[in-house]
Length: 412
Ligand code: NIG
Ligand code: FE
Image (cartoon, rainbow, N blue to C red; front, side, top):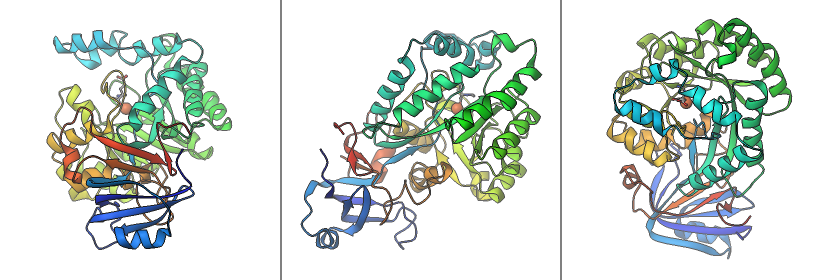
């Protein structure tokens, strides 16, 4: 059991607080953190923190280790069931992702698995996945629905997220209703009616039940149109929910501009986006959530990172954990790909999985930063420096992760 007040020390600390005059990661050597009642009470040089901590126990001291904010995975589809290994084999043999989807595979094949899941199965799968994410240093996870494609099955996914969020020994969960993801087979004949059901019936009921904080739409050439997502976002705004969009994964159909018009929390993927779209995102403060495991799995070219920098768009890196385009549970793997295949810099990646990711989930100042008063969400790595984590570890060496000052994975 984690004590109520304790100290952790490490040879290297990154706070991800850029207001300290210590670079974009607020980094220093030989530091410590004092945690009291789930919040950061002090963080800084070891001697200062130990003096402030007034005898609170030093529970972990890693002179060769790294202390960082707990990682924040701002885009996952983690409440899934089933496996799409046969489709991956088809894609390796040359078949396209969109063609497989058009033939009734893809998202709809996971829909069948989700609809067929037994009682408690989605919750168990999600809890297990979140537990494994915690062992990779992740302490906050956005979880989307989007594989139910009817009201009851979408709710079943969101109820699995609600179930997981009652467990203090797992990462904190931010639930998103991915309302427009694919047309289920039963809606093929009447697309307009499906969108109308989603917008006028399912969304208000899900919002009233408190099952989602954000609404998401997949806006692309073989997915939903801008006008359909616009109707959804209008309704979400009225209901007090934030918005986010899968934008430009395969084609630029104006999804970034749409996201910006609604001051969406994020526009995600963005392999295909114009300079005007990026300017709009920057002006709106809408984050670009980059998903390098997905574009790697699909063998796609990277998004226009240099143009994003020029436009001043806020960059986030996430796993996209899903059974189709990103069969992974590892945000550190996405970090490694962001470095090697996107050319993101170490501080862009680290901020993109901590402070910027938290901001994109409405947790600014709460998570993703080690600062007095913030939640004590931390990761203690058996690595000497933050750059060491950008290497492609299959399983990065972690000593411990804490959420709200409670050690994850341990009995709460
Ligand atoms: O983020 N592109 C749409 N949605 C997911 C993939 C979903 C799936 O293939 O199951 C994505 O890549
Ligand atoms: Fe996604």
